[in-house]
Image 1 (cartoon, rainbow, N blue to C red):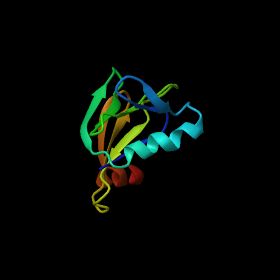
Image 2 (image 1 turned 30 degrees about the horizontal axis):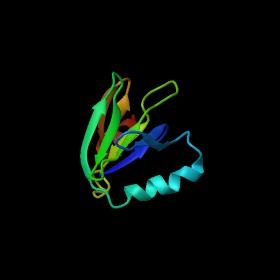
Image 3 (image 1 turned 30 degrees about the vertical axis):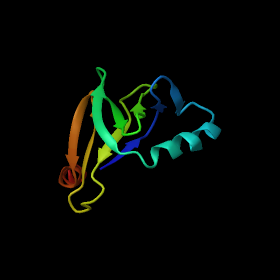
Image 4 (image 1 turned 90 degrees about the horizontal axis):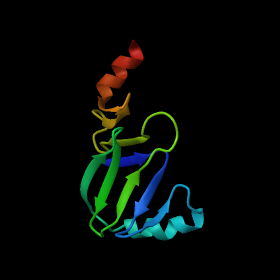
Length: 109
């Protein structure tokens, strides 16, 4: 599986925020380097409009936090099966599960 966070995000340590989408970009490489060898231990949702929280084996968390109007801007997707891809995202305030077949059907309507 892969996770895209399209908009606001942050990387949390045990007691502080290491960096986020509004941090100075020079802070990003060190924080991203800490993510490289970590394993995903848990994925959870929080908030009335579902945001996503990835809990990692090194104690860090990658969290989506939309700060503009609209919907939370993240997508969880299957990276391996190109023929039958699936995506989980938020639409109209609820979790939405889409597959390659539902996307094709919508385009042809």
